[in-house]
Length: 476
Image (tube, rainbow, N blue to C red):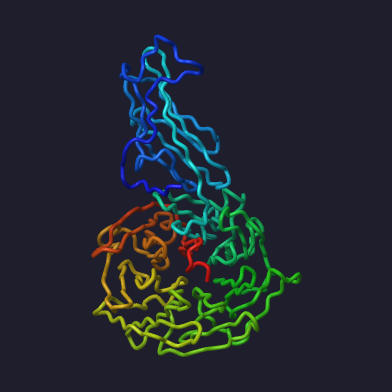
């Protein structure tokens, strides 16, 4: 199967220029050599088949000569097909339900002699687990009228961003005031703060490929005190952080009881990481480790200042960021030995303040391999090359792209497969939160290149998440 992007224009897709009839050709019908009529579809790379992603909007240029009554039809009604005569353009919208199956799309037109010309393209539909995709989890707003429940946006590897994908598939919102999302064992786990009976629960579990709900757990009233983060080991050992600390919950137990992890009281309101089969979380300046075999804290280490981010690095390592006496530090931590193998310092002079981000619920840093991105809660995005220690300002979004947006909601994140960097901004709070932008950047060069921007889709974005897919790093 050929994987294609829609960035480059290209060649001829399916050019069936001879006249096609329901049965045999008439003796007097013009041949391909004598007729001037034709219909062609222009797609990427001259292919006759195409991969689509759920919710994708695909636009295809239709080139025709001396034809009228041009229409587009599809063999699968789940795919929406429309032909714009004025633009000579075919628009194909892929279904949100990824199990809808493939489709053949045909464009046909009639010449002045009544002969029908057709061109055909075949489309397959990828599922939601492709690691080049992106999810944005919205908290929603209980203060708006009417109140908005949480929701999930899917950003295609191409150019489409589709809101409310979970609701479209399951019929209800994943939760009320959702805070965090974690992938493990072919499942997503979303933790929400409120026990709204019209949603799918405080803990919602759904399939990574289809987004179909697998289970939901509302918990009893006051069992959890405003839960904010979740981490999962082996697809069923679940760790939930709330205002008290961290709780263990096992979906394989019939009782489904919450068990408090001793020593976790005061766990920081930030993302936990799972590496080498263990759970890592921060508690002020402490990095602590939970062993799921015993559900006890088996290691802890204190650094010189509050931790702002714990994220996975390659080969059973973590990057840990914090601020010590005004200097930002990023450590490379071995999760087998717990040793710090390297420390990089980041000062305001060589790359910005790493930690005006203490209040962010998402990690203060995000990495693709050796390349780390951070923005604090501002709109200046920095790139740090861990191997060399070089830091560089890549873009000031407020200055160059969107001066009216005053709020960066949570931190920038990089897709570890594509290297694309994502950022969410709002015009402000109150009614202004509905004016917002999602940005996708390429920051591999000397400066950021804006690839896409999508307007007014977020509703207080709790975080940006990327499918692990089947890459070796994803299997850890």
